[in-house]
Length: 518
Image 1 (spheres, rainbow, N blue to C red):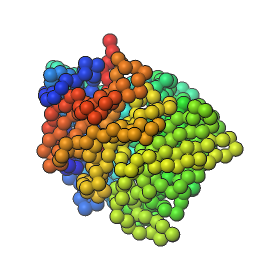
Image 2 (image 1 turned 90 degrees about the vertical axis):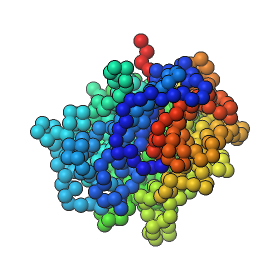
Image 3 (image 1 turned 180 degrees about the vertical axis):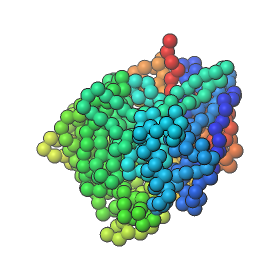
Image 4 (image 1 turned 120 degrees about the vertical axis):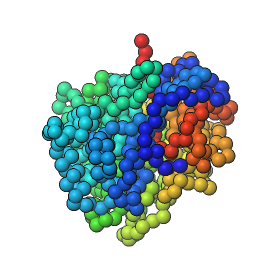
């Protein structure tokens, strides 16, 4: 199910096989990003699933037929390898190799200086190098997330690099997803984003009211991280630099926002430079170190207030909002793991002893109630909300940062995985965060779900669960896939529409790109 296609897919018609696509969704695109190896890897035994090139599978919604295709994110490294017809970069588990380091430095130089005779391709070199100074022999694959800015730009994100802008084109009635080029946040003020110093991590947050887009950038060598904000016109408004809590440079994969704050989840999955340079895994999960939640003013003012919490890790946040009765108290909902090996990318440290550790990626929905007082804060409540594992959350984006009643996630199968701890999802879950009740839509036997996105229904504006959940599902034998459209108000009723698709490998994150309004 994680086997790569090794090629893109031209546009084709695919049938709506049950129900019909809601009219308000038609002519818009559902898409999902994920890793797909284009060229045979240099070191197959050290290759990780995360290393694949970004391949975006998309469906243009319609009726009675839809349109489906898949296109690679044509990053600098992708175009360099296409030109050579072979892999030029290694994966994230590989220790430094002189020739690859030299090639990576050369690529950074020619793309930064934009030397015409060496440029990898017009689409890939706009804006300079596409990954920061501390990423050398790995390429920017653009394979992790996919998002829209407040100004409407469609971006493919990569955990350790800058994003790539994408756009849909149409010729002869056929759609294609094209790579516009490297996206570098710019602004007319003092805030600066430098692609040699900064990255734009997998997850961003766009405020439904202001259309401000917040993002995180972190430095695993310089031991600093940054919080950036784009305004509704995609102008870089502010970008502040901070020290990590606890001292170690950790992976900040996701975060949360409220109406007033950015909430940083600083967990002890720490970059281990010495271990990596000696041929070991790049990260260590430090069981001896607490977690910290950082509370930062969204306006870009003041310092972060760090609040110590228990040792744990959260890859994804579901929701955060200020308490309606006490604005100095924040409610945070996220999927908590008691430990993580980052799907086989981290060693484990406990009581000062380092060791390899069997992958354990079991996340449960969890709630923290956090007092953020100016004189210091504390965790008032830390509580598990679900007795079965789940992850890949969603809420109505019109309610992001506001008090919410409903959240959605995917239940993690306890009987099967895709190898190396890669979870499989066997049900869609609707959580009532007030009552604790849950509704569950199980996948059919032999099928699993992929990441979902919530699309608000304009006819039910203001109704928190008034919308649709869209996601791919896949047969366990890898021979078939479908697009499922489920009414978020009543998920147990099953899909309102399904679309038959060719087999699609498992991937990462999904997105809905609305049609342009005339």
